[in-house]
Image (cartoon, rainbow, N blue to C red):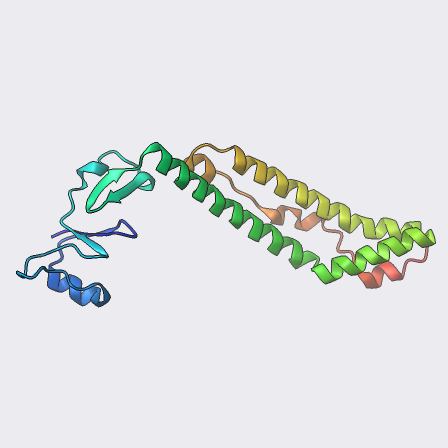
Length: 186
């Protein structure tokens, strides 16, 4: 007997109702009042999967107990959900990468020191500090380009092809520090 999970759309093959009850006790009952295998809120019993023939798994859904391909509107929603997940992964990686090099506190202290250097005419100090912000701008440009790339993709496969690697900027990070900056008096 085959069982289809309603939320994951994954099948469990050749499992009796008692086997399903033992494996998934929170989802019982797996039988009707006559003791016959029956669908429940979490599982479809013996689904006819022919509605999914030739349909990519990403576009599969259920109508009640009936597997079918998503319609165009459902596919558009699913595509945007996928785009959002990829965008959020990029945002998280970008923020993690940048803050691993320059924490918000360090960035704020360096920004204040840069403003002071400009005010006092300490051009060498300002130039040194600026290298860190220039590096950050290059990382931000790469990030922005990747966001644009994600926005321009029209299929799940194209979205899945978008990759990024912030570590390529490791070698160019000037490693600006407050201590080194204040030591520059020119």
